[in-house]
Length: 114
Image (cartoon, rainbow, N blue to C red):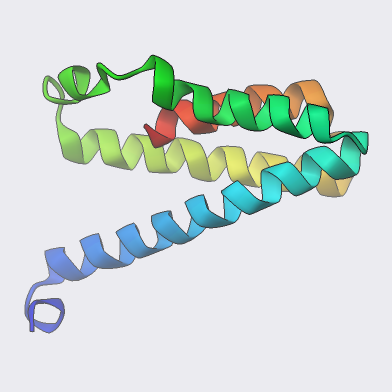
């Protein structure tokens, strides 16, 4: 089995599993945070549109990705998304999270998830 034989494959598998889990949680938590901050489904729709918009606007991302080192790009985007997630958590616990800041973080999350 490759997961037992190759340390590189094991690291890739674990990293990808954590990344997919984090992305899945983010897709649930951001709308809940927006709704708890604003009590508005319209605001929640706007923020989730901002989160998903890069998927529509950046169809040429594959061209860019083909020109850079994919391993470094994957690491960079995962680190950026991790930092953004911890920023949301810290600011939410601190009480300083605003809808405008959450919208900007959602856009960054959306861009790095493309």
